[in-house]
Length: 120
Image 1: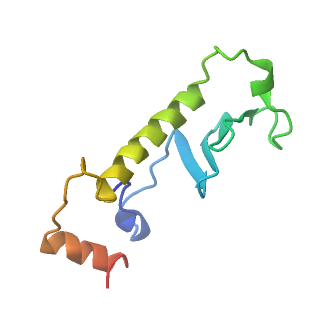
Image 2: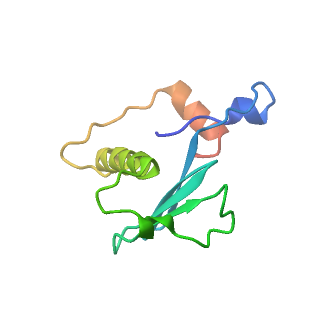
């Protein structure tokens, strides 16, 4: 399972952790990574890239990818590519791919998943 439990945060036992970036996906069409400074969006079907400077363009009107050469490195793009690669590996593990490993859940883990509403 990827991610972190929000249980202690919801119950007030932990203060919020701020993340440097947030990842988002829209079905299998778009993936994005968002930071305080910018947003990078990748169209997974066409490869079209969009990059917005959220400090100077909060309404996301100016795609600054258009002004970059194809060889220029975009830090947010590197973040997104790493995230996509990690998710691809995870999907392979969960889909029964021949390279996947079976994960056995013990009673404590099953109880935790039930308490979070993932299992009945």
